[in-house]
Image 1 (cartoon, rainbow, N blue to C red):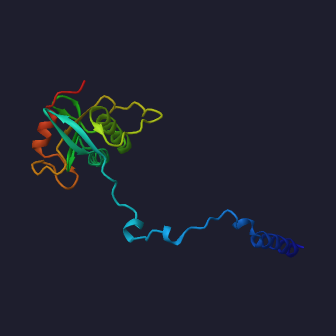
Image 2 (cartoon, rainbow, N blue to C red):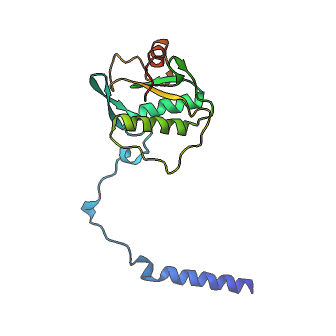
Image 3 (cartoon, rainbow, N blue to C red):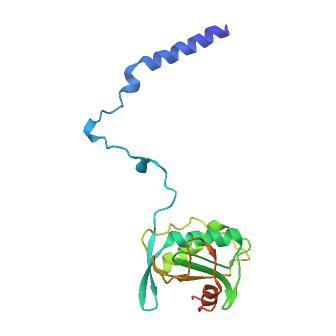
Length: 182
């Protein structure tokens, strides 16, 4: 009895697969419309494309990569550091002027979003940051101030490095004494 049910189901499947209705929605393409595929277009990108932003720094404008700042924020939150830098961006979290303080419970996603929104409001960002539908919950880190030091992309005098690192004493001293943003 079970074998008759199995054979009946198999025959129905074969009948459906043999009918041409399943192929009617396919479209034909011209052979010359197919573009050659290269290895470079197939592999998955290992890095995000740059999201450049133009920030006013004193009297001049600097072009900075927001992706660099996101990497720094992720590093700060995951290593519980008050200050870190990478390429064109140095970031610090502080309790007040002269008092750097590392985040305690804030996730890297939250800190990355906070700095992104900070730059979105104070700079001209190429690809705007999408606002979250709901706010992050209040934590002990909610009253920390965000501080950023930026260099133009490719500036050889920038004191940051090619890897995300803890701020040098010079960078830390510069950032911790900046006035707090209103």
